[in-house]
Length: 182
Ligand SMILES: Cc1cc2nc3c(=O)[nH]c(=O)nc-3n(C[C@H](O)[C@H](O)[C@H](O)COP(=O)(O)O)c2cc1C
Image (cartoon, rainbow, N blue to C red; front, side):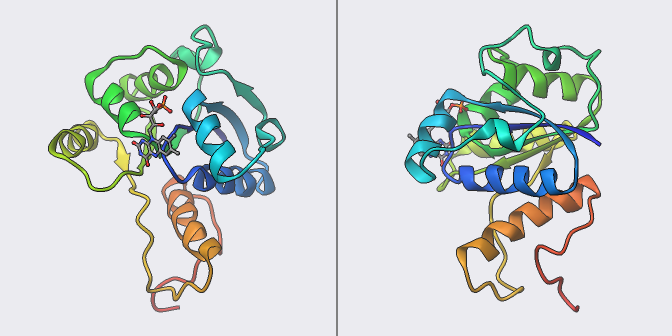
């Protein structure tokens, strides 16, 4: 499997980092874009992070000539985790001025899988309308809203719940959380 993963500057960059760790364990080929804002947030929330060790190749946000910017570059899916409201707004309006919004726009126009994991609270009407618009276009909106029915004991359990939900959407087997009824 080949994936594009984008990490944008919402709080919760740990969700993106954990997804990359699990995908690496599962030998998934990952093309990664970390936005400038995400790097700032990561410095604050995680400290120094070696993104290149967690992916097959890392691209800069402004590398608009990268292969990912073209529909001829085929991937199975793209995940934006976490997704800032700025990036959600860009996708909902088709305003693609960086590699993340362009690669996501390509996924949409080519009818390929796009999973967006928004993180913001509270949400105002523009956020909600943008997310609804993406959903109507076939984008999977998977908010960073962990459940509690698996009886989490640590922050890692909460993070793994969301990462597990992303893997479910990608059709990748995992045991990151205990399923209801199991
Ligand atoms: C510490 C920190 C936390 C932030 N958290 C959020 C957030 O949870 N959600 C959000 O939409 N924006 C958040 N922002 C603002 C975004 O980083 C900002 O809108 C940025 O322009 C997003 O750009 P990007 O989508 O290109 O990464 C945060 C910024 C900082 C510095």
